[in-house]
Length: 302
Image (cartoon, rainbow, N blue to C red; front, side, top):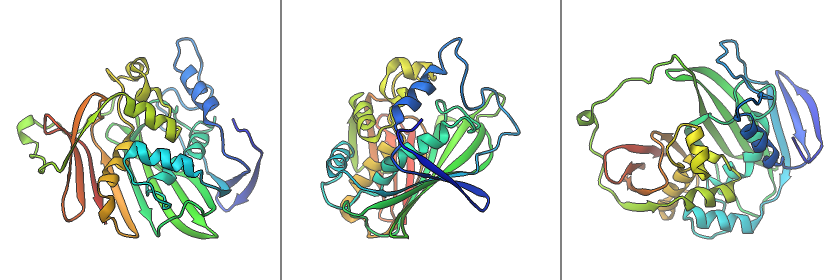
C-alpha cells in the first residue's frame, strides 16, 4: 500500500503510525475500482451496512514534507488562485490527500472507499503558510454517528510547522445505506430565491480531469462518464474541494490573514453547463445552478 517504511507507536488511545514517505495513491484507487467489478470480492471495508462498525484508532503522521512550487502553481491555475508564495487555504487538503487515502483504504476501515460522499468541509487557517516551510502532517478518523441517509464520520487533518499547528481541517463524509430516509422534501416553490450572482462560471469535463491531475483525487465519478454511471450519476461531477477552492479564489483579494471557512456540499455539480457564484459582505457565499435555484454549495467565512 505504500512505497515507504513506517513505524507504529502507541499514543494513549490511538495508534500512531509514523510514515517515512508519501503513500502512492495509484494502487489504492486500482484496488478500490476493482472491488466494484462483478464477481470481485472487496479486500477491505464493509459491503453491507454494519451497525457495529467502528473507525480505526489510528493516526497517520508524516514529518518534514516539502512543497513543490510547480505543483502549487498548477493547483493555483486550476482553481483560479493568483500565483504567490503563500499556500491557498485549500491546498493542504491536497497535500495530505494521500494520507487520507491510505487511512480510508486500509482493511480495517469499516466502509468501502468508492461511494463515500463528501458532504461538508471546515478549514481553519491559523496563519499564512509559505511554500518554503517544511510541514508536518497528521490524519485520523473520528465521530462516527448516524445520518438520516446512513452514517457519517469525520477525517481530521492537522498541519504543523516546528510543532506549531498552522492549519486544521474537518472533512465530513457520508456512507449512504439502504433503508434510510432521504430527509425532508421541499416543493420547488418553497426554495428561497438565491442571492444576486456576482460571478458565473461555465464548466466542462476538463474541470474534473484537471483537478484530478493536481489533487491526486482520481475518483472516476469526477473523470469518467462510465465511472460516474457506475456510482449512480448520469455524467461526471465536479470535485467538492475544487468548488470550495474556486469560491475562495473569487474572494482572494479580500481574505484575512487567518480565518475559518466552512462549506456544505448540497447537490452535485454536473460537468457541463454553468454555475452562479454569490457572496455577501458578511462572508456568506454560495454556488447555484445558473438556470435554477438549486444550491450546489453554501459557505461561511469567519
